[in-house]
Amino acid sequence: MGSRAKKSDANFLMQGSLLAVASIISRVIGLVYRLPLTAIIGKEGNNYYGTAYEIYNLILLISSYSIPLAVSKLVATRMAQGQAKNAWKFLKGSLLFATASGGGFALVVWFGADFFTAKLLATPLASIALKVLSPVIFLVAIAGVLRGFFQGMNSMMPTALSQIAEQVVNAIVSVIAAYFLYQYGAKAGAVLGDSKEYAAAWGAAGGTLGTAMGACASLAFLIFVIMAYRKRFRRKMRRDKTTAKDSYGNIIWLLLTTIIPVLLSTTLYNISSIIDQSLFKNFALYQGYKQHQVDVWWGVYSGQYRVIINVPIAIASSMASSSVPALITSYKGGDMDEVRSKIHAATRFIMVIAFPCTIGIFVLAGPIQRLLFSDTDPSSAYMLMVGAISVLFYSLSTLSNGLLQGIDKLRIPVKNAAISLVIQAGFLYAAMQFFRLNIYAVVLANAFYAFLMCVLNGHAVVKYSGTHQDVKKTFIIPLIGSIIMGIAVYLVYIVIDKGLGSNALGTIVSILAGVIVYFFVMLGLGGITRTELERVPHGGRLIALAERMHLLK
Image (cartoon, rainbow, N blue to C red; front, side):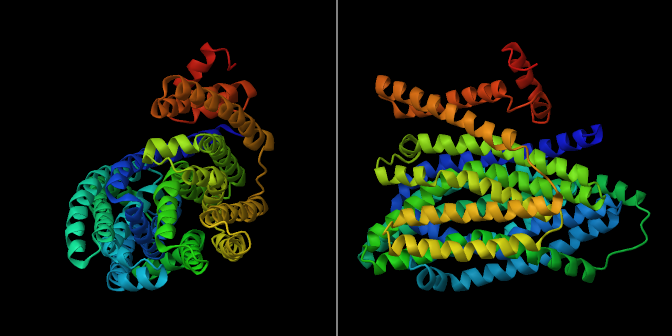
């Protein structure tokens, strides 16, 4: 590997790490505010909140989710060719496209809220929360264009800071609005004879109001940054001597041809949750389970289980987002050695994080549920234990989606997602029909879907890039290190929980102990090298610490 490739990898991982840190901070904020939110709206409220989000996320996937990636890909391509003027024109054309798509789908959600929640997902009162989310689709589409532009410029800082600002505002407004709207719903429901359900539904709407206000804050920040950056970018345009100019018609066509494969891939990749909910709720009711029990199960699954496992998966999403413009630049330049180097580095980075997260969540499933949600129900802990493996599979499959898109193989993730989706639906049906696994069938089907995507996408990445991972360093050593860490975490938790009788202290201290143990075990096994530490933020401090411990030569 040449010095240029190493420098490129270092910047690539640095940008990905920056976005990953911001995503983790955002997810942690999300976890923290869900504690008081769940306390206010309860498991029934989480059911309405989660149902509204299922529809919202699906529409967001169709209307806006693929926009940042498409814009970053096209802007990175133009900047790699020195076409700053065309890159800026892409920004303006993309804003026009996002206004039309985001605005149109926002209206669809507003007027179709009752149909989506009642007919599709058998949860009619969730329409209140869904209507509050409808304008957010428009705001996210515009923000997505601005984020994609900066990512195409290989700068993740605006995206990172806007994500944090969004979550801070979201957290504050969600809790306050949920409290007051819960009270309003209780009064309105008392008149109709069902105060508890109406209170939960309106409380959930308060939670989604926080999402709307957070999106406003994020967009305002991005607009401020793009206005400040405009003068600097104009200097790049003045140096641009390109004579070929992209027309707006060509821009829209390129956006569509880039967005559609990405859209199909991400929609199929994420629509599994909608299919899971529809199959599970309707089939569970058919099997004789009570509506209340089904709603509680789904409330725990969507409001607790998925919130927890999505924290580490966010790291893979961040790395996938940062990989696309970086890979496009190398791929368009014909430097396949650099492409393979980036793919190898990104996969190693994700596996070193995903393995310990998987083991940690499995070991501390019950303590985490009690700490975060005051939930002592054993079924909630079992759900997290059964589904912990999803963290590993979703991390790798999410990353591989981005890697394939970065080497211009946009259609392959679409095909793989479609195949996995069909097989997963059959798996879920069989698990409920023949084994009556109720909500655990959903958890297992979700993990099985991600596993299939890992296998199919992984084969394609190897086939089209020629990348071959170092199996020992990428998979075996992180697994061994994670198992050792898991044993240490369990012992530390038991000692503190039994000795001091504090679940909170035991959970927090055991997690911190796990991080330290894993870091030193990985150094001792040779799973983390000096070069890799140099590529991450504050890596110099970690190197100095490892040298003092005589674990790094």
